[in-house]
Length: 75
View 1 (tube, helix red, strand yellow):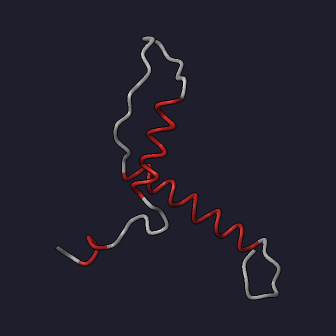
View 2: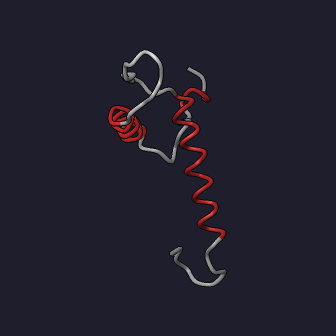
View 3: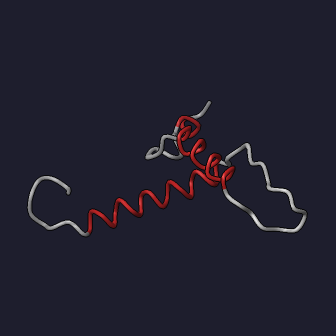
């Protein structure tokens, strides 16, 4: 196993909770498409988790940028 295999691709996420929340949300949504059956998702891809990771990092950066330049605590 090389060093890059040990790197967590989504360090800012609790992946099991993100997967659980995404699948629960998908199960409760009303999808409209031909065929009349609602899709039953049972897996979440690494690509999905990496997109969520990117959004979380962007949100953190945005929040930090909005903070006043004085003080010790991000609020």
